Length: 141
Image (cartoon, rainbow, N blue to C red; front, side, top):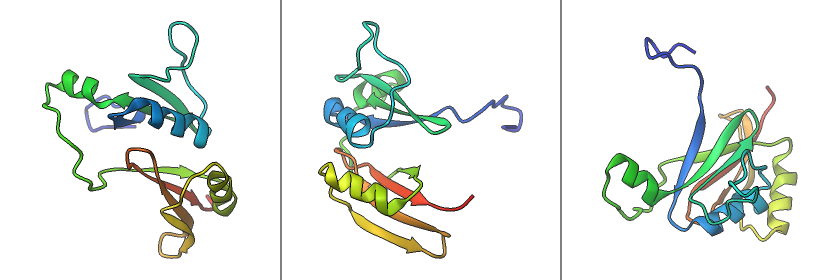
C-alpha cells in the first residue's frame, strides 16, 4: 500500500463513534455476532466502553465513545444531524439468510434484500442503535 510518501502500511480499522455505548456494543456483539478482538484488562467484555474492537473478516470494526474521540482531537461535542456520514458494509455469504437471522433477533430491516444490478450485488440494509447504516452485501469475487 503506497500512500504516496506517507509510509502507509494498511487500512487499520473503521471506528464507529457512539454516544450510548452499551446498546451499540450489544448490537455489534450479540445481534451481528461479531467476535471481539480484545478483552478488557480483567479479561471480560468491554460492555460499557469506552472502546471495543471486533473482528470483521480481514479488518477491524471498532466502537468508541464519541466524547473520548472529541476530547482527543479537541473538538466540541455536537449532536448528530441525522445525515448518514458512513455506511458499515458487511459482506455475507447469503443476504437473504443473514436478513432472516437478524430479523429473528429482533432487527427491523431498513430495506429488505434486493438485487442492485448496477452494483453487481444483492444487498439489505438495517440501522444500529444510534442510526449508523449497515449494509449486508453478497457478491461473487
